Length: 216
Image (cartoon, rainbow, N blue to C red; front, side):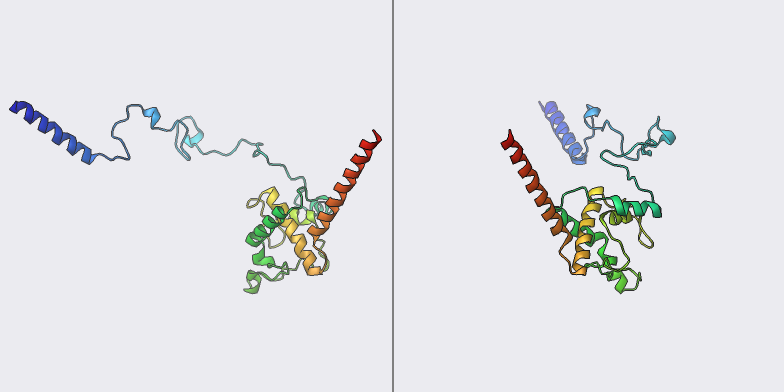
């Protein structure tokens, strides 16, 4: 009995000592490694079978992100003129889009162009950049397409914002810029005119449908 008691005490002490040394967050033994180790490749990991054994590789040549639509206007003077004349905002003028456009404009544009679009942003006031015109300056043909094109490629001292913003972001910013231009010119907001035009079109379409139904 004494021998069994000694063995029991030894086992208890051993278990206590081992449990104290064990890291609860990282088990000492993995009975089923597949349950612990990730099957997928780790980001920037090194694996045999990859070129230079690097997991991180460039996308296949010619591939594009899901949902991305190629921009069909070139980064040339001719391309800018065409975009200025032809491009129109493809998303609806809604309060959500206008609000998001204002928010994005404040983040990306107001530091140079100013909160009012008058070219008096904080960087201009601090003389970091000079000669930034207002959106209502004479000689500037600011249209929906012009704004989008400039954000895509940049112009003069302004760099491209294509990598920082999505297609929808740029159109939302364009909406806000056109409203700022209207304010500076003392005109009705561009967005309010678009909303009225859209409402009138809906009324016309509705009337045409009703007339067609009555005729049948």
